Length: 116
Ligand code: AMP
Image (cartoon, rainbow, N blue to C red; front, top):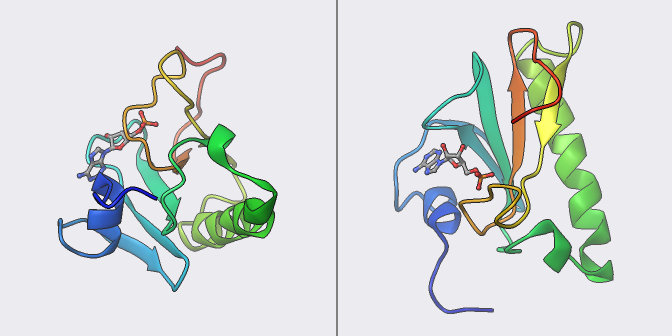
């Protein structure tokens, strides 16, 4: 693991300000600075996995619980009934810009498909 903290580790550790939505020992969630929808939240594991493809078998439970945490947030944000979208961008073609695994939770309006 690299010694330098990722941007999102600094956010989760409150070294950089963010609008917190959820926090526990293993996860942190905060509002995206540049929202793409009325509700746009980033849910991260505190563990700095750079890309989804860097996850290993040892991360299986962590990845599973990431979605359960996100489901709780979606419910708390009132998105469950109408629906919403989860997105994980991966690598350059996926337009990943921050190399600390994060799940985008987007909702609050009808979302078009396909994206981009
Ligand atoms: P991605 O393109 O999937 O890597 O998404 C990175 C997301 O992080 C983008 O939607 C950015 O708007 C968001 N972002 C970058 N810096 C911050 C920050 N300091 N606070 C909140 N969101 C951020």
